[in-house]
Length: 574
Image 1: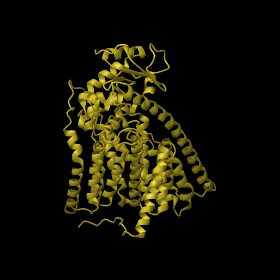
Image 2: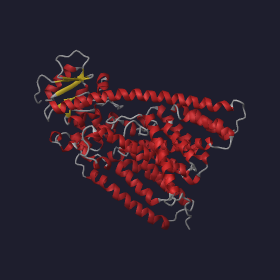
Image 3: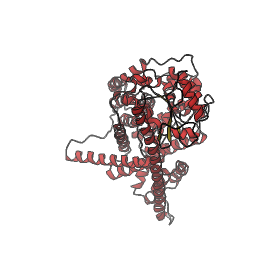
Image 4: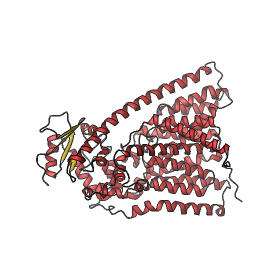
């Protein structure tokens, strides 16, 4: 007979439950606000390059009918953005993206609290400390090691929203709520298909561990699993349909997909492209998380099986490119599953630090908890001494030396200083990024008002993050000018000749490969503004955007900060 699950019960709706929900909302809101201060925020940046044209529905406009990159965005494999297609216009996009960022963070911290409850962190003051540690955790700042998946980053994307649904799916599976867990993973698929595929493995690890403990039988599991899979299939169906109806899946002639990944952005896919430092830091993060989780002694939380399942996905990702060149398999971005490893490790470390903070043992309160704060909330490199602290605490938990009373102020002061410097650095970066973005926005608005509808712009193509030799190297001056240009298509409603980031479309639209590669190769081989003007004239490109600080063969027709717009002397088709 299957054993029953011991799960938290929802209180009856009354004064007490309303108060509990209000406290939980306040804690989640605090964690959200603190994490946004730590990460910073700028809308219309980075991967929003792919989202803004969808929001504006640019593929419905006649001037983009022959632009394969823009047309391919109809088949971008996230239902979240497709639901919003052609529904957002103008500067409203900035506050809408910011609201999505707030919602994404709040859901993430709600998912963190679901895990905190499983780990025995139930009192409000304990949960407040826990979410504070999560918001400050060095493990979660920026992008994951050894896979480069987004964690607490400076912009909103559907992938970071999927992190929160992943946490809920795993937490509900740990509670034995299989139907809810599977449905939530279906919602994850709707947001980001490959994240849902990763999540299947830790879900199975949790369920198999419960099975071995006698908590499930085939009969007791089959009904909730079937209901959950039906719900997941319903949520996944629109994305699957969009993938299956994509007409851009064939390239002529064919090309080597792994060679393309090396040239474009290999860090989600190829372990050979990862710096050795990232690999050992990832290993240290996993060890810290696994040891901290085991020291919590909460086997019924199933945190360790979930963590092991997430690591297994990452390990499979290291071998997959050696076994296949298949686009659909490599597009699972298995190395990016390191984000789940980071999330679960951060939960284990924050939970253990919280427990020691409120421990009855003096050494835990005055020495070990402050040390954990200083080591887990500053530099990622401090995770190595954190590993050492966990080992020493396991062997010699009691500290009797007189200096133990000075440990907490010293450790916490060091952490506070680091956090203050970090926040200042983020603020400076954010101001500079906003200035760059605003210059591009002003240029784009000028273009919409003052240029023909079918005008085409040759612009700085953007930095290359590839490791292969397939493409010529990028130009540092052009790379600096490119910063902030993600907003140009959205505000200008004009075509761009080629951007390096447009190469991501090859993942879902291989037919775009040769257009992207050939144009990017040609543009990167142009050494200066006269070369770019001559190239634009030969290709029938209407305008060239370049820097203003160089000697120019002609006067610009418009200037926006460091950006100048030039019109080729002759614009005739090649």
